[in-house]
Amino acid sequence: MPFLSAFTVRSLQRRSRRQPLAVAGILLLSAFVVGGLAAPWLAPHNPSDIDLLHRLQSPSAAHWAGTDELGRDTLSRLMWGARLSLAVSVSVVTISLALGLTVGGLAGYMGGWIDTALTTFAMNTFLALPGILLAIAFAAFLGPGFSNLVLALAIGGWAGYARLVRAQVMAVRDLEYVDAARALGASGLRIFFRHILPNIVQPIMVQAAIGMAGVILAEATLSFLGLGIPAPAPSWGSMLNDARLHLFDSPHLVLFPAAAVAGAVLSFNFLGDALRDQLDPRTRLELGL
Image (tube, rainbow, N blue to C red; front, side, top):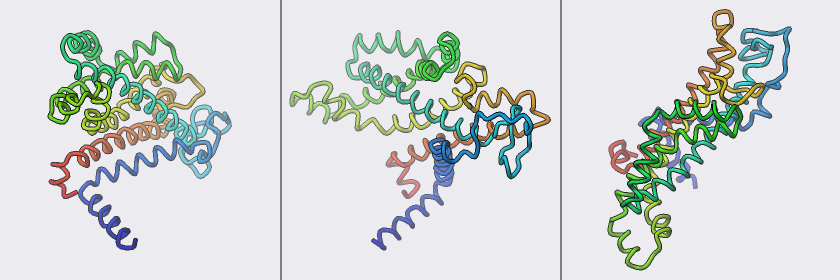
């Protein structure tokens, strides 16, 4: 056990020297996840408590990130906003990935007219428009709310996963081990889930990690436009929107939410790069991992 512990420590030190951005991403992501999940216990104040006597206070010992125009503690709202962003990003990526696996897997494995129909009339239709514009349109049509926000973002983002899954399935569906399973009488579902999916999961994981960053940014954008979670729920985007009128007299109201959004987006991007390097054998060999 001491040898194993020493080997693990040396391995982590070597990785941290060769992949410093991955370490930074993991640290940022850990702070984001812990702050969001433990917000009910770590937040110093109730994020909805109004204290007009202490409004627009600068960062101090009582309020580490200051207070907003209603006297609410900014740090507490940031932590609860992280909880909201985490819930939205996980929900959107899960739904988008499920749709992408279903549509892209079916198109890539079946081929023929099914592939043509799904690719031409489904994927390309959604990919023809920017995802954020689709999300804004659907959010405006459905109205504000957590479920509507998740649905709007999932509708705007599933096609990218479907296109990736389709390409990966088409690359492996005619390989020898798949032909052998098909010759032994395995069903299409068994071949897909037992032989194809495990061999295409690596790029999907990388795309999902990077997709989390995109969802966080999109959620902040919709909340900034008033199409996200309605007040008084704390959201980083709505905090930035409320802080516009106090940009010069209370700049901390803009700096802290903006830094939170940037840190969360960077953490998932760095994590995606680290996963790509870790899961690619050629990159691991070049980096000496």
